[in-house]
Image 1 (tube, helix red, strand yellow):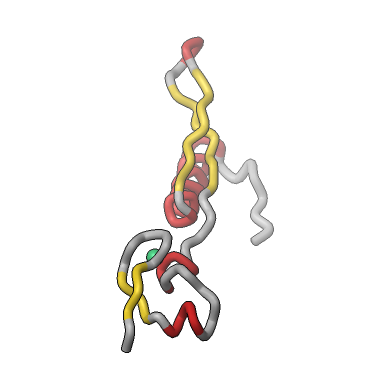
Image 2: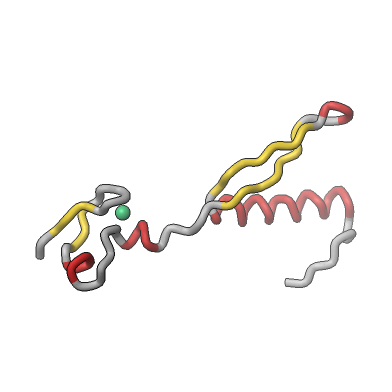
Amino acid sequence: MEMINCSRCEVKMPELRLTKFGYDFCVNCSTEKPKKAINITGGSGDHTYNTIQVVTSEQYDSFKRQEKLNSKVKFGDAESKTS
Ligand SMILES: [Zn+2]
């Protein structure tokens, strides 16, 4: 099987993928999830600041999980869950 380089990550992939399916990027790149941004509040007391961090979907999900856990500890069941 002829191999070519992925146009995005340079990894070898079957040429068929390009000639037959029209993709010039590999499976990994085609399944890569979009990045997300999360709001982060840092500092404490009067010295808090807000910033945005760009993360992967996986990091975003784990961040949201962590955030839920934290809010449970701090605020009880202030938020009702719909999911
Ligand atoms: Zn690739």
